[in-house]
Image (spheres, rainbow, N blue to C red):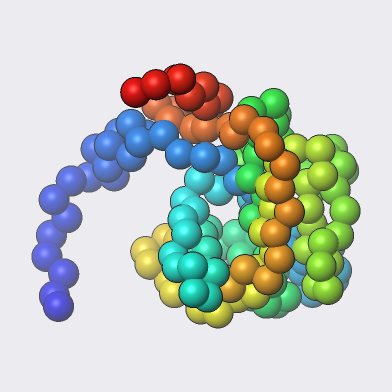
Length: 169
């Protein structure tokens, strides 16, 4: 397969994808100094049920990705609709992201679980890393999950929102 010229520029592509609303998660891990790392991520999807596998995409130069490479595990914290501030903290350069949100260690690897802001969390073991342009796709087998009913935080049209399902379609 050979790559041809790009059909659209980055601004056109960004406009297209901003029109596609998605849930908001914070991906977390532990670095080589046992410090927590995390980043807001809306590039997340389920890959397969057998074995249960998630895919997340992170900026290749991200310290969170570096921690995932080192630890071999990560957590996907699905944010509830009241966690907009946390989504913003983990999407911008902040000195001590974990100093501003309550968290505790999850599972044997001790990956961070955002206990106040995540209504669901999956602990994953890395199975594959693949660089694609400026990002790296991370595949992880889901080792454990925790969840409680809540309304998810959404992001689309370059703004946060909440999901409010209709009674009938």
